[in-house]
Image 1 (cartoon, rainbow, N blue to C red):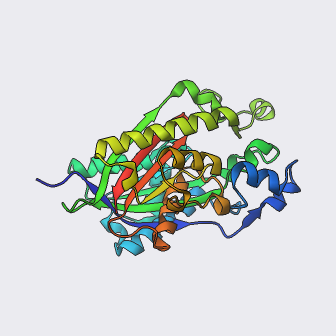
Image 2 (spheres, rainbow, N blue to C red; image 1 turned 180 degrees about the horizontal axis):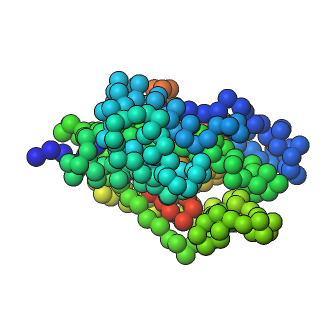
Image 3 (cartoon, rainbow, N blue to C red; image 1 turned 90 degrees about the vertical axis):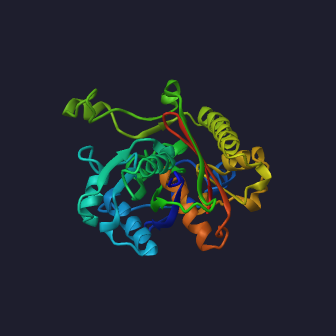
Length: 330
């Protein structure tokens, strides 16, 4: 009987070349480098050029992952893309990336889980592989948050940025490695804490009058989001560790959603992990929504912080509100 556990064969990433520092933001809104660093831990972030979209970023990250796995695009059976910032609403971003990769017919669809979307995608891939429907999945997170950021809103413009990450996922051998536990939840009653204003949707069709009074920028109730983020990520920690029968002190590295250094610190404290065992890159990339975890995994692996056999805990939260956790043995 084949195992229902899957493994990450490889992880790839792509980030824009342009770096926006806190000093640059000081000239745009009423803020300072000290204020941003103290409250968020962010010192700089990457911003994509206007002519570089989510499909292009996701395609580049997918190429990187496939090359590292030594696989051709034709080996991919499914492409699952997490994005909150699609280039267009129809068709799915995954379909456009499939066309660029030329897989020869891989099933392709998007996941709208906001910052939790990539862990959602991993869990969906796990189920598709376990059911025998596919053998190889490409899980991509591609986010151009700069495109939906209000650059006059100090509460949000200091946080968000652009990046893409991808992983090749296949069935694991029966050697105790691979994804050990997954957990996903949501609370739609908290949707207004972090949302985009509706425009160009079925409820608010685009017309000249609407464009004059509405915008599609991200809006956030920061204090409430912080409180619920810590609560939900701690819940995810407990859930996946209980499922897997693993104690907190067995975790080799925590790879959390890179939203804010204070949220990361609070989650690490709850998990009983010193910050030396937590991967942090929010200072260099900012909050790239669902791309934060695959990018962090890539860096941690490249830096030697994740070795074969390492026990890796990933937790996240996002608009919805959504939250998720995944525990894997590398």
